[in-house]
Length: 353
Ligand code: IPM
Ligand code: MG
Figure 1 (cartoon, protein in one colour):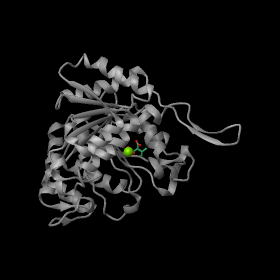
Figure 2: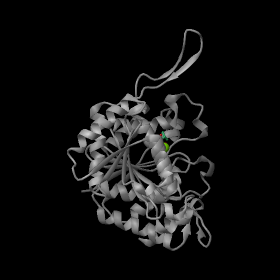
Figure 3: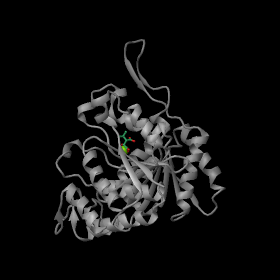
Figure 4: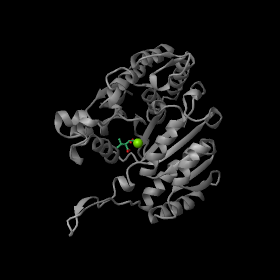
């Protein structure tokens, strides 16, 4: 049966990297139909809405979604509702894509590109499981209000229900079962009640997964441990905001955030796939962006939503091959390698396939 993939290029480098990823997908000769739609600033410019209804309708109907990136200085002064990021948060929330999987793998070919010592990062293979549709990103009430004394006050609400914690916890335990069987839950339970509950629910769940070793770590320590001795981790599970922050830190361990794919899944395995990096407006349109994170996101899409495991393996092997050939975009460039453009990198992956 034909599968439908919706492509959302978005803003900044989004269109360039998605073009290369779609080329790679097209090379595989699978029975996949590709449609595209607007999101983010590109959607604001044309429709006034960062998540037009038409996009949402297409997204609901698709088997999987591939997203580039959203955001840029052009829209930074817009009111909250007309900011590109609202489009991204909206689609995550509307489709209930609560489970965000962010693997951080160091390709041996890139050990030099990391800012950390090779012995600290070589062989790194961790998975961050980030809750994506709750926590302080979505908690109500929120806003900026004026107090009686005329002073303004900004406020957000950090809230998680038991069921929200349980469903992301299950995803994390199941992911750990398929890997090193170690799960570290990240919280701030020395200060925040919401994460006291988080920790308790994780402990309860652990009884259902006796083969997984559960540990807990405070988020400030986790940030430190990630740059001190990252290989101590197998799977990390955490809430929306801590996961946002820790996954950027983890990304840099691998040399460049330009290498990291991600999957955002709902309860039934439907998903949206996107690079972990942003829209990089400073290099947009210059052919400098690294398309590999988006290409690797296609591999995750084939594996998690389209049940094309062999094709997913082939993409990952092709990426290894171009790295072996010494091809590098600027973000991962090192001595003795060949600097290539976004398009050249995409073509090289296609050729390796
Ligand atoms: C991410 C991004 C988004 C987030 C932004 C663009 C809203 O940083 O996917 O990590 O904070 O979730
Ligand atoms: Mg982020």
